[in-house]
Length: 604
Ligand SMILES: Nc1ncnc2c1ncn2[C@@H]1O[C@H](COP(=O)(O)OP(=O)(O)OP(=O)(O)O)[C@@H](O)[C@H]1O
Image (cartoon, rainbow, N blue to C red; front, side, top):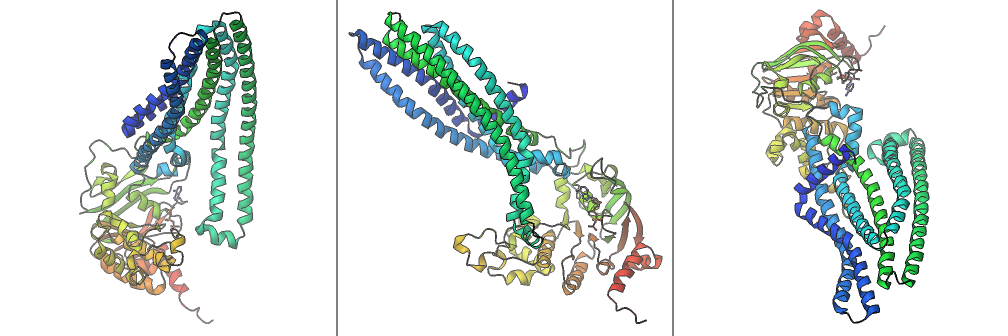
């Protein structure tokens, strides 16, 4: 085994020790017993047969022991299976816990957006938690086979050392073939990872509610179906090749085993005839040859399983053992102070990857505490990226962002985020109740229906939610409906896009006391009336508070204390609505375009 394989085995054992030390010990004891009992049974059988043939010696003891060995042979594997299943469940639970704790510890977004890391993360999430228990289970399975094999080999050595040599020589090609097979199996698993995920992706697309509209409108079912089947066929072709190799190896292995066993039997019968072996010796010899072969095959099967489990576990370890993505700097403050002066972007440069173009190229911007700032700019100007930097999902490549003069890198991300309420442009619609969908904005107030109601009122969605069949307890999804409540309309509802937008706004407003409210396109899905009404309420709410508003709807930004235009990665204009109109720059042009769009064309 390589160093990394030992590392995986040690890591899996550590998880098992923490998760279920008692069951681990039970499983190890059962492994040893299950491996040793067939050998004990063979020797007892020899004793019984020899005493029967010889006569005179007491038989009761060996017969009773033989019967006990028979019972143990039946019971031990069953107990082993039970212990294994329990160990797998417990270790799997702890492994899952460690995996998701590690995912939650990733404070930034870079890892999630790095394709190589994300690939590993998806694999770890899909199959990773089964890695540690599987590593243990297959190692113990292999150990059990090894114990049986070694014990029978010793037996063979005592009866006929030459036979030991024959069995050992016959095992060499099998061992080599099995090792090769196991490497090929592991390689196939890795090679097919991408194809398997693409196949899963197409299959999901064709059954997803979200994609159903476009799939039908554009008639994509056939295209995606064909692509899915192509992926599946290529997966099958690889598996078929592997199965054929395995069949060939198993057949050759079986034939070789039969030849060795046959030769052994011929020799043993001859030796018994000549009086060199007793009848008992022949029995134990035949059992030993079969036992060595059986043990060897158990070792090989489990070694193959172990190889696959190690591969899966490798992805798991890669994620769980990854260093922090936003490591704390020396002298980091324990918490983020309340915002008294403001937030300052100082020559901030940022790009998503070294290979990608710069998104921000030296942004200088101040959001003074207690004021509202609106950020406008064309699509792709970098407005949402700026918000993500403000939440410290990424660190700037150059320059700094300061919270009351403290660099964000000197604040714990979770503490900083506690002080910020955000409606993201691509907000989440959770398959949860209406109350939960709003309450998750402040988990400590998840059960505070008064605060949830107040946030919903401010976001203009209270009436809609209160009128739902089960009010705020109504599920905002129909995905959980089962056969029993399929006819009950109260069990789940589907909201409109604009209603969801208001729910997301209410979620951010749950952080009523937060120091900074960020609204990224909060009115994108709202009708004109709602936009006006909610805009007015939000303006009142934001008065005297620190807020950042991003919007393409110029009428919603005009009342901000300061408006900033972002273009080509830098701030190109700043001022009040009137100042920017008077300046006649990009803002004035955008405002003019939108205003003109609402007016009838002048008759010629
Ligand atoms: N996760 C990402 N990875 C790589 N590039 C990204 C990512 N997110 C955004 N970009 C790129 O960064 C640039 C700025 O995007 P951003 O979303 O910040 O613009 P925006 O001003 O908010 O645009 P819009 O008005 O369309 O919402 C775009 O060119 C976009 O393609």
